[in-house]
Image (cartoon, rainbow, N blue to C red; front, side, top):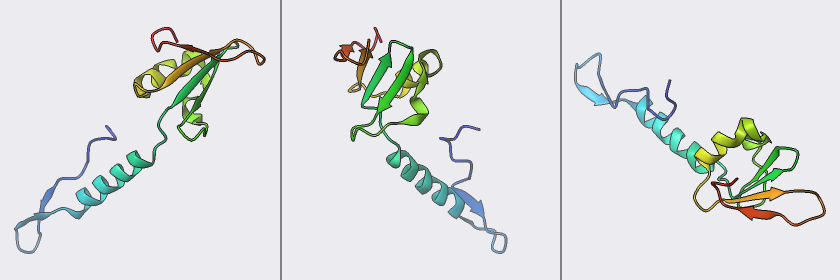
Amino acid sequence: MNTSQNPYPELSIDEVSGIEVPDTRHKIWAEGYQAGRKSRQAINSVIKAQSGMVLVFDDKGEQIPEYQGCYEKVKLRILKNAPSSAIFNHAFDCESDLKTVLREEW
């Protein structure tokens, strides 16, 4: 099931009167879906370590665990969901600065 498509009809037939009426389930689902989208953390910066592990942070510096892990396993999901403003980095070791790279090179 596609989670972004409301599974409930906008209108339903009232069983007593036979008149089309707004389906409250549709409205409740839509409001809940929009609230969930607004509360999701947006990717701000991504760091790929020399070991192949990836760390992902939002604009508040909070980690986003669902995007973290082994590079090969999280790469496509990150590239798909990261906004164009996201910053991609490589970390070669703990003692040197991060190297900012283009999204395409990351």
